Image (cartoon, rainbow, N blue to C red):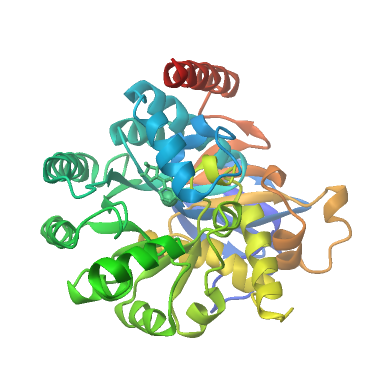
Length: 432
Ligand SMILES: C[C@H]1O[C@@H](n2cnc3c(N)ncnc32)[C@H](O)[C@@H]1O
Ligand SMILES: [Zn+2]
């Protein structure tokens, strides 16, 4: 007997070796996909009738700061340096562990509702984010942000906490939680410090999550300090590899793209955050051409201002079309691949595709909506017309987290009320 059967669905497998099924069934047992076909002879405790719906791999958000839901709409329409150093960092200085728990839980709720089944996060008080992931049932790769700022003592304290966190949570929550090292960026951490982080990551067999060439200011500062850009610096200290997740990568030269491709670095494209902070346009089409694994991230809610990856997919598809004056750039299926397969590859989870043997992280999207009628082409609808709020069911690791729009794992009203209150109190402390 299986655990879950999803039937009568359009099955968008995202498996390059298999096509879609117009009317199919997905069978789940022990957290894994055990069968995909037109019909099944299995029976299950839970049978989900997905008529007029699409079942697809859950979306993967490869760069966020979950607890920053607390700062949603808190400081908009500002220059990145002013935004971060003048507003966000002073506010973050007043954060408590409890704030981070509540902010992270709200983020998990928002992700469950909008079809994100796993995410990569860099923040502080990460035990709290891990607890929120544990409680919500999502999958995540988490790291403590290391912001050395050329202060040896701060660097050492951060690294110690980063290491403690890596070791405490690696493989927790039935393997849903992975841990990484999180040096903030090459312009906020020294060369020696980045090299030390690389060593520690190797020792622990953990990956590294970093912001990379997000702004022109970073590029100019690096050239002035080191006479070379961030990618070349990281290459020269042996930092880059397939366990590196690099967020943003906006200000890349063609040579940088070659290096990222050669080293198998995973890039998280944060198109809305880059547009909102006017950081620039990442050369995504060039990276894809060179075989770089490019996935999608929302960044934190202070620069987006939500965690809806459907918006991210549409925006990425549109921006790169207009940027290259080519409407054939980033077609719908390729963008879906960035949101699923490539994200799963970046996080090293066995998800991102509906395929027998893969972990059962999948979502059911309700297509019986005015804005999704008629439907000639499912991938096109998912990228250009669907919204996160069209997701009706979310399953992670073979567990139903949301069933037909009802979130089963969290008390939705309570999470919203408590996070609202925590955010108000936090901002009052900042302004005091
Ligand atoms: C982990 C750290 O990263 C900061 N952070 C959030 N968004 C960005 C961004 N777009 N660029 C750089 N840092 C950012 C958080 O505010 C936190 O201080
Ligand atoms: Zn970020």
